[in-house]
Length: 245
View 1 (tube, rainbow, N blue to C red):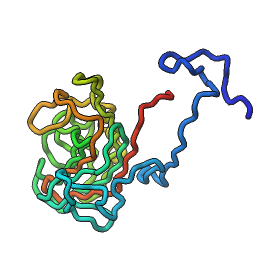
View 2 (view 1 turned 90 degrees about the horizontal axis):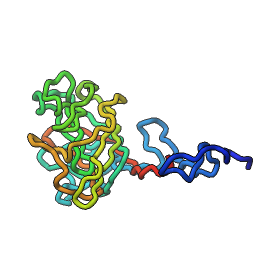
View 3 (view 1 turned 60 degrees about the horizontal axis):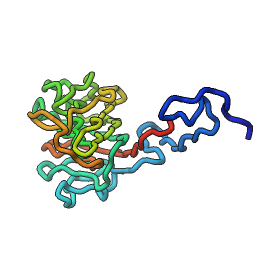
View 4 (view 1 turned 30 degrees about the vertical axis):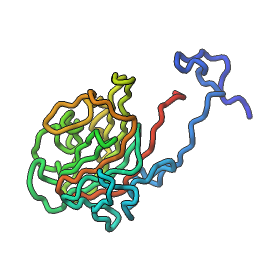
């Protein structure tokens, strides 16, 4: 094979100083086959819900989930509790589709409420936020109780909506925080948060912090807030540290 790069260009700065600019010996990217559409899982995705069963899920206490599975989606069964994946994740890319009930009941936080918790701790709000007034850091797409989304990108009640989220887990050195959790969030293709550092695990009516050190991995959690919210087509890619930049 002919030379695909150069061996007379300057060396890159640290931490990549072993490579020259356009270095033909630099490792090639891993090949990942994309899905047929942007919603379909790529070849390296972990399928968390394919519309058939909840085999990869459990209750927060380790029991069998009682949520309904039908017609390719799962639906919250109110007052049966949150559900979590059996698989654990750290830095990741998440794709998830959801729909609030067609019949509008309640208002504010009482309307189509659920939540997506990365590592079981960092909530991106699920809510019927279409023409629905509530506090800004609790509207659809908020990093709950911390950051409102840049815009309200909600579709009408009952329509399927899409989250694409890139999550970077916090890093600790012993009890000391080295870097916070970061979230990049798209709703229906629209950017809501761009590598937003979180204040800590999210909560309700309290300030978040990183004072309580937690492990490097955790499950994906979906919230039972008492509303008939549906979910489908959930997949996740584990994202390793980028060491070939």
